Every structure is written in structure tokens, then in C-alpha cells.
Amino acid sequence: MAQALPIAALVLSTAGPVVEGIGARKEYRAAARVDEENARLSVLAGEQEVADLMREERAVAGDAVADMASSGLLIGGGSAQALLRESSRQLNRAVVTRREQAASEQANYLQAAKDKRRAGRNALISGIFSAASNAIAGASGMNAQAGVSAARGRVRSASLGGGA
Image (cartoon, rainbow, N blue to C red):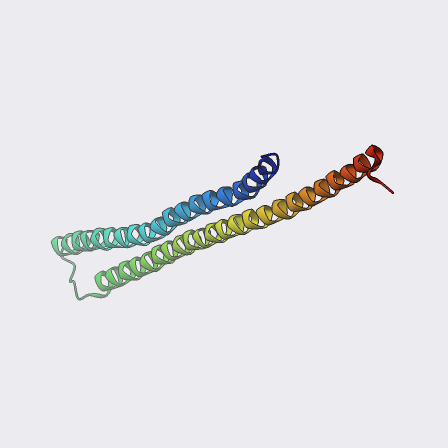
């Protein structure tokens, strides 16, 4: 019975760090899944903004053409055509810029998810090494305690007349 107590303490001291490592890994993995979803949503939001930009540009271009036509300018003429061409170039630049921003946001979220998964693995590995260290230290302590008990037994035996 006296021997069971140190063994139970040893088991608890080795199991604790492993359980903590598993818990930390689960938390990091859950946070990584959130980052991955945010990465997906950032791309969707970027494409929604691109669609909004295009819709807005078509409306503005349509209004500009209507205004030019009502004022008597020829649509095929130089100034109207140049205006529409410049408007289209600006739209294309805005679309490219927004898509690049969305891609950058996505990359940042995916890197954060990767970092969190790595941190989760490291937490688990750290827990395992801590448990192993506790087991080795505990076993060493139990071995030393057994040696001290044996030495006390020999001293007691010698003092009681068991020695030659």
C-alpha cells in the first residue's frame, strides 16, 4: 500500500502535462479552423466588393452616356469615347487592387492558421516531453528511496545483532 501512493503520484504527474498538451492542441486547432474560415470569407467579401464596383461603374457609365446623348454629344465621338475608356481603366485598376487585397488577407489568415496548428503540435510535444521528464524523475526518486530504505534495513538489522 505504501508503494502504491508514490506510483499513483507518478502516474498523475506524468498524465497531467499530456492532458494539458492535448487540450492546448484542441484549442489551437479550433482557432486555426476559425482563421481558415475567415480566409475563405475574405475572398468572398472581396469578390462581392468587385461585383459591387462593376455594378456601380455600369450605372455611372450609363448615366454619363445618357447625359452626353441628351446634351447632343455624339457617343462615337472622341471625348465621350475617351471618358468611357478611362472609366473602364479605373474600374479595372480598382478590381485588381481589391482582389489583391483579398488575396493578401486570405494569405494572412492561412498563415495564422498554419502557425496555430504548429503551436498546437508543439504544445502536445511539450506535454509529452514534460510527462517523460516527470516519469524519469519520479522513477529515479523511487529508486533512490528504495536504496535508502534498504540501507536503513541493513543498519537496523546490524544494530539488532544480525551483523557478523
